[in-house]
Length: 247
Ligand SMILES: [Zn+2]
Ligand SMILES: [Zn+2]
Image 1 (cartoon, rainbow, N blue to C red):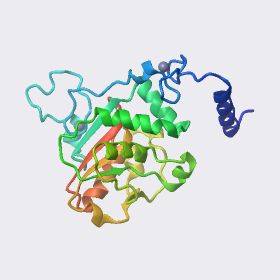
Image 2: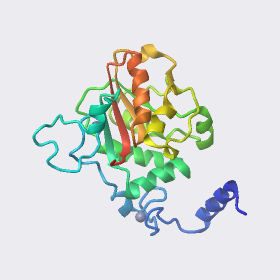
Image 3: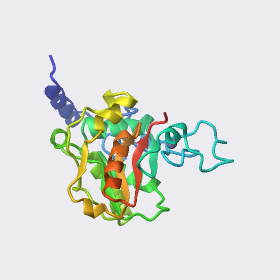
């Protein structure tokens, strides 16, 4: 019987013996310069393109949705306005980008952090002034297990590209929560309620915050973080994720 740890070791040994193949299409990685991904798949990430809800970034089905009323929000935002001001995403959580995030987080493959952060930063146009970047924190137990916080690695890329201060050890996760991927939409909001806190709340007061995470699904995690930041007096909270689901 192969246990999790011996399977992990086995795949690591295979990495040394066999020529690297792309995690998505299985063709040789070649000279892509990206760990575990070929050039073609890396170039095939789907950017998030409009029309989207101006608040949560949810893609609208019809291209005409925003023609008559550009401020038209989706049903979810109108029913329950989120604590954040706006949520932006670089790409759609599908195809090779979805696979890259999966490998990055769950394999886990730390060396994918810099190229993913670079891709995300290139998709972003900063049209609104912002004061600091804050990554969504991991609980220290999960941080020990993964070895790195994927949101912090992405935030580094944004912070470097836009010369924006990184406030990374202030917002913390005070409660260990079940992984959101195991839960339904309603359970997700409940799961993260009261899970975050600020060590130095004065640092975010009157600041325009860019909150960074890897994937936006229901937005429950980002919404809870935004609530904590707003309660501490943040002037605004803009969410930016590497990818977003379409539902
Ligand atoms: Zn490929
Ligand atoms: Zn919305």
